[in-house]
Length: 115
Length: 114
Image 1 (cartoon, rainbow over the protein chains, first blue to last red):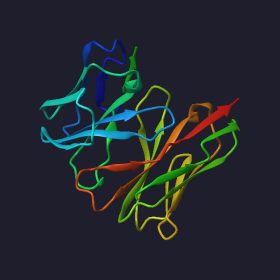
Image 2: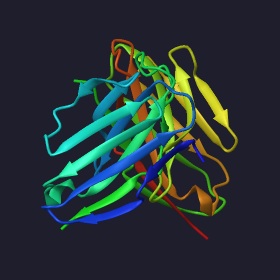
Image 3: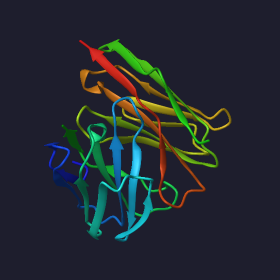
Image 4: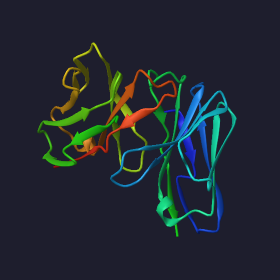
C-alpha cells in the first residue's frame, strides 16, 4: 500500500444528500491534495493543503467543501451534487510543496456515483 | 499553455511482447517528468521520475527516456505480463510552480492479452 488510505471506496448518493470523503496519510507528509478523475480526462486538481492551510482552490464549485483538521487527515464534504460530479476522487500527499519536486503518493480513490 | 499529450490512447498487445508509449509536453520551464501506472479502481503509482539532465531511467521491465530538447518522453515495457494491463500516465511539473501542481496526460490504456 502507498500509505494513503481513503474511505469509503465506493459511494452512491442522491443529489440532495450530504456525504463526506475521508483521506488519511501515514507518511508524515506536509501537503495533501484532492483530485477528480473523470473517464478519458486527465486528473483535475481540486484543492491543495500545505500544513493544514488551503493554498489552492482550483475553481471548484462550492458544493465541494474541503477540510484539513491536521496534516494527516483530509476530508471532502459533498452537498447537492450533480450527476456530472460522478467520478473517481483521489487523495494524494507529498513531503512538501515546491514545484512538483516531491513525489505525490495517491490513495486508492473513492468511486462516486451521483443519481 | 502547458499541456501533456500521450499516444496512443489505447493499446493491446500479447503477453511477452514489448511496447512503447509516448508522451509529448509543452510544459515550461520544465522541472521533472514522471510516469505513473494506474490499475483499474486504484490510485496512480509512480514508476520513474526524470529531471532535465536525465535521458534514461529504468525500473525493472520499465524503461523511460526523456528528450528535453524535443520535449518528448517514452515508456518502454519489455516482455509484457498480464499484470501490466493498466493506464500509464505521463505527468510533468514546472519549475515555476510553488504549489506542487502537476500537469497530467490523459493516459494510455494498455491491455495485455494471454
